[in-house]
View 1 (cartoon, rainbow, N blue to C red):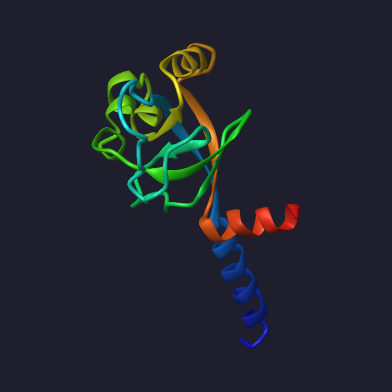
View 2 (view 1 turned 90 degrees about the horizontal axis):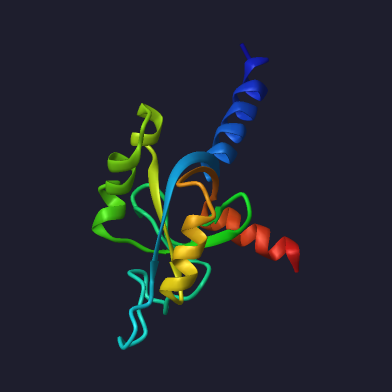
Length: 142
């Protein structure tokens, strides 16, 4: 019986690491700064800028790093369409796509947002690094 303790500890460690980093199917949408409006403030407090995105904070904590196939975003904002997964439910063709999370990527301009959306697939597998892991990755890069 005592021989199982190291195995149980190892499994707990692996499960904990997996909970902090996960690959998941996402419907990636775009939004942008409205001309003539004041600077937009994210739900979590900072001013929005390129590289930020909106997520459901119950599923992806603010501060998490969202790794796309060709870029990285930081989760700082939310919105009702993201939480309700409206884009995934409306455009998903398969059950997996309809169950996908929604990541709404912020752009400084409508033109940039529309260009990116037209040149990328609507659904993609993204990697989500929790805030603790994202912070660790940033400090490892220093």
